[in-house]
Image 1: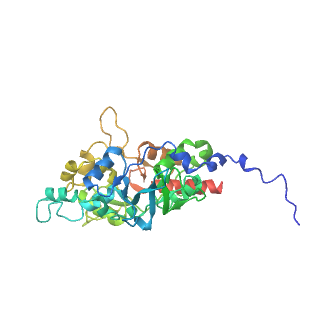
Image 2: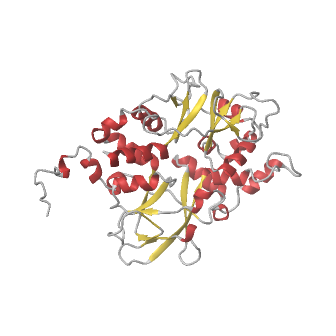
Image 3: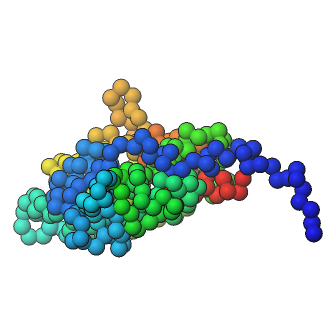
Length: 376
């Protein structure tokens, strides 16, 4: 029988990454604010105003228990802490893109159909929010993430396309980690990809060597970039974003190809980057402000609305048009800083001429960080 060498392996406590590996989801959400939610009877106008007022891009929808089937068959309940009586059932998630997709559902909003476009938009915004759950795929993905889930397991979930999850503060399922479709707790907090990245930025000592590597070395760059031209109208952009399950698209210079259809997505690689159009931009528009922009071009919208968080900070009230970008050889630490500080969900990769070469999303950053931590 082979003898085990008592001098090896070294205790895990000597692993420089061990403090980070010991962290759990509850360490991230401990100071999170109270959950922002809307009732199932709320109008889209009320829901949109809630998104604007709280600076969030998605909210869970709450309904009375026993009357609904939750998104994806989920049974995520809020219960009284003392008696255990179920008070509400979270039936889905509604994002800004869901609302925009509903608004852009036909050309009548744009004045292209019969009737008055303004009154049609007003009518659309009176629809109950429960009617539009699932307009976009993300609304059908309602999950909880157990507070005792490790950071590495949490990163695995968020690296597979889940952008956010509810975290119960007093879970009744303490021995389970990972995402669940069934949960009952007295209160919840929301955990997003951005929350995790912000937390990882604060833990630099445990991932310092990884952060020094470039996004290309780590395999974080997605080379498939769909874009809009500067002549694409806002309403057309929203429809294309819904079809392609995109929350943001780069704006590139038009006219690169003869006969190019400006109402469709184009391959953005090698095209001059001049802007970004995002559902996050439209979140800041109340209904009255949104109406005139539906028929404008995406470039007109981004240049005329208030300075966007998708652009770098301006000096002394003068808007800057510098886009949040990086290069192939930019260290991951710098890309993470840009994403977190500018509160963007993707950083465009450009070459020395400012032409698109790819993108690095929050999903990509979390994916390569987790892979590097595991290999370490």
